[in-house]
Length: 462
Ligand code: MN
Ligand code: MN
Image (cartoon, rainbow, N blue to C red; front, side, top):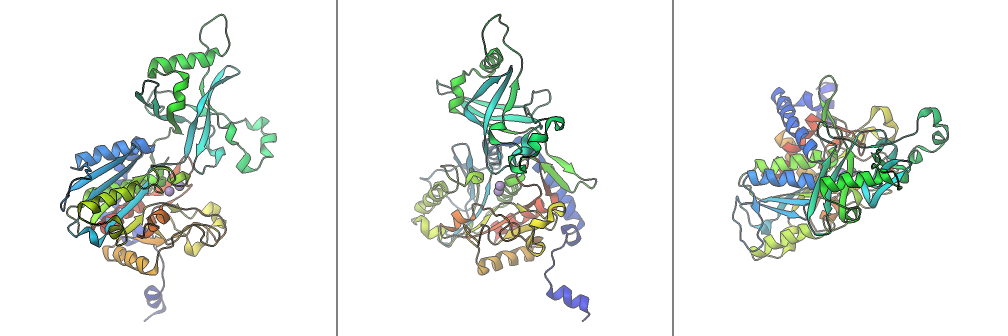
């Protein structure tokens, strides 16, 4: 045996997916990516993602979950939690006593939320005050086109849906930055303080209400326009969830079109394939569950985050209808926590440890543990479960790699994995590497996206 042959046999060396897969797999990945781009543009917020997924699910024959009902193999159900999280399930042939298979992704993304009393006028400009949601680099959110999405609940209880700044011809919004000519004071700030939280003020108007007297006429004019368009008054902002997101659309990146640039890949790049995977299976052995959750970016707290009990209650209800307790199902269950990891960045390579980081185009990334400072706050998947998952992927020809979120002590982060693992479920993170994660415009690889779809499909089929 030559040295090269021996190396090939003994070394672990992840390869570019296009070198490993058949030519038609690349074409399939490209086709899959086209639909994914539409999903990105139509589902920029958790509420929009739920609406899109719900419509897809109904079209695929999913019915609203009824806790009283006993389901049979092949039945397809959905459960919507407060319009911000959704569970899809396909009932398996095996007893629930043998556990279920869960793919869990999140559909919230870093953004700027409007404050409860957001509108003010300053020097004849009208602006919105914001409070950022999730981990952002604030300087990235200025001087880019922004859109406004969300809901407003009026005093009479009726709900208005807002989505403005996305369609051709609609106005957009923007946060100003100081010109470089006058930026020397700002330039002395550290990068993380270059733009501060209270400087993330969104410009929403500049023309005053026509009147010979009175102050705050620009604000008045904006409120008048909002009243005409949405029927709201200023106090209605208090009972609203309005989210400022980049107004960009998803697009191919590079001459070879191998990558996609978009807002919100984290974590739609896992949520979308997890959704498509559960749509692709018929009559699985184990009951398959895709949960698309909210509030991951702020720590999974709240009744729509995975620290709440809604997933457990759903499984309890399934169990009860079969004469079981929820824990009997959960303790035999398996989960892929479907979330992104940081892709190696050749320009900022010093924060990565090259042998344990994920790369664009080398397939889905399996992340054994997350956390920070000595694996703090991670569930850390077992050797046995890691072994099971990688064997499953190898057998199916799904291209995979391992990844850790940067060098030891360089930083850290978490996913929903630990909250599901704490329910006595076997869990590992499996997702897609992302470049410029949490930026208004993130980058992923089409091949990695498709490998995620294949991985979730295999997982449900086992
Ligand atoms: Mn994520
Ligand atoms: Mn994130």
